Image (cartoon, rainbow over the protein chains, first blue to last red):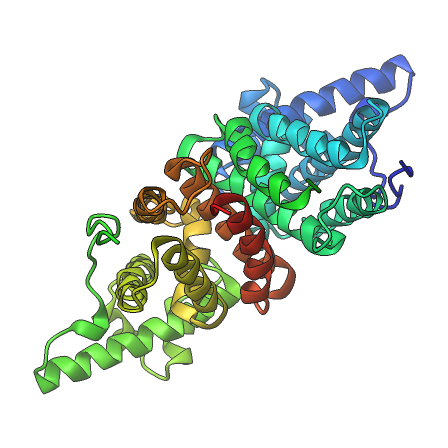
Length: 215
Length: 215
């Protein structure tokens, strides 16, 4: 299969990949600790109901120490959303390494993403912050468009490989998958705090793949 | 087909159905005017970014007159969400009158709901307020569960009528449809302010019905 277009997910910095200098590493670890504490609180309570003081208490640091790394609560939100998006190029790399066909790559990407929405607090907090974006006074990346572009690229490969039903077009199928995936994890969030994202997505994804994949 | 279970949509009061007394009618019209003005603002800006003063200005009334009908901004939000939910039993009645088979009833309900999400500001505002529910200090009904119950009931009739694929179960298909519908209208909201809910749902719904309906 053709390589997925590298432009589909804009490359974004990930904390995990920062410098090797011991002092820098310690600083990166502290930043990550703050970020995870903030992500837990944003996921549990939302952006507005969380203060920087709450974050400091959660990670057992002073407010000043938190402010040293993130000057505002908005900066914390932006960093979490960026970290959320940094997950996907990494996931794409992992799944590409499995050398599946294009349709199986799409299915695997979404399956792994469902696992991340169920288990990874950075991913959960990023999704909640995106939902709350009208309440956050900061520029956040436009959601959904990178995922739609990535899946459209993979589904175009699937079309070329004869893996799509003849009446399915990559752009429409990509939008359908992303919309359905988003809805699935959101309804799971509201009704069961994302405890069942994986099984809920499996139910919905199975139906969609049946309708998209060539028989 | 069996009648849809009347419990699926809890009966909720609708302003349109209030008393026949001229004074009561005038009061109901005024309440509706306030509600539509508030719904426009909540849809455009969200709950937090809208004040009761903004609502009063929008409908060209005094703040006192708005407060006379709705004592708090939260009361406005609750009334809009109730009015949103009052749409669905009415829609179910209309669609039931078309006397379609159960699967076609499901499809028609969702098609008509997509039209409402695209064109009806009360429906749009209700959906946005449900998304913003963690920011609203009032009890709102749990979203999704009534729709899931209604579709499960209709899909059970479809199963009995032999209209479902043998491996499809009504509960899973109902959750899948509701999750996908919600995702579709939400992604449309974020990317194009709901201008294309109907066509986006048509794309996604077509795929799902292909996977659910017996061949």
